[in-house]
Image 1 (cartoon, one colour):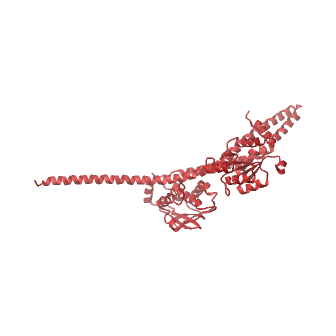
Image 2 (spheres, chains in turn orange, cyan):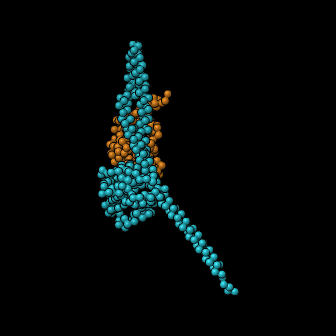
Image 3 (tube, chains in turn orange, blue):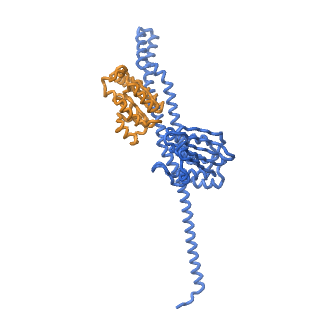
Length: 152
Length: 323
């Protein structure tokens, strides 16, 4: 673990998507779960952020101007192997996108667009579940929200 | 042997033969007429199937275009639901405080503390500060969905047999909107529209031609380029230019592009009917489609037809096609 990772106690997520609307929606969802969310509109800018910050979770779109999302994820896999990689795309049924994403970029999860209610929260719970001690605060926060948001 | 056949019998035989020939001629004529009708209906189906193929090809892209806003709008609505739940809790706490104040009970301080703690827990400042932005972004997303679905519906709609007056610049904008997913990663779109009078045309078919030209232009661009759309008036005619900075075509290709089933695209990518149909559609408008292209420089297609629409003869032709 690097020192910067030890210093920042917030779970950091990077969202790469060419739709600003998606940035805002993910910022809301993940922000409420105690995450710090960085956003980039294309692969090159996103990889810059990945290089600079210590990012725990990368959520990446497939079709974007410039680099394709799967190529971004493959580069991310070698650039920052400890960052969990997730593909968020409307092309979930397209094997030309999905197969290289799973076998090549070794993504942790494939999330469809539009994403189902609760999908992002479940994703966060699962990735944090892999390092429960390191991210105990985030886990508490999610538990807290689960309790408060639960229908009466 | 060799008895002479009576003249009346000869005449009768000849009459029979003639009647028989006439019957066969009538039958052959009827066959030809039904073959012609079949051909006409096949051609009209071809026009429609090319349009459907084009729309089908674009539908996947349109779905993607719609999935983005639907994705973030749904997410926003869920978040808004959480905001509302939090705000209701906060409002209830405030009401308790107000009631306690009214009663001047000893619980006031405790209630006030409750309200403050709750404000912290639900991140009240953030919730209150974000609601307007959340609603505005969601509204924008829904408008996008509404627009693209409406534009696609306008395109899939089959024209009636009658000509109608249309705003050609608006028609181009709709074609761009439907083809947007094919265009946005390939090209910057530059519009140079002239002020045009209403133009008589079959909007669905002119739209089909425009869609074809736009998709072709995007596919001709390898990496990223520019698609420029210009409109103008030339005497009694209206014209539309669609130019791309794509790979261009060799003269041997240009010679054949309007032939049916001629395509340079990969299997499954093109029907080879798009430009042939464009040619037919422009002819049915008493107009024409012209092309200027240089390898490595790009291609310009020009559509030109009378502002008043095609003359009667062609309208009848078109009626047959529309059926």
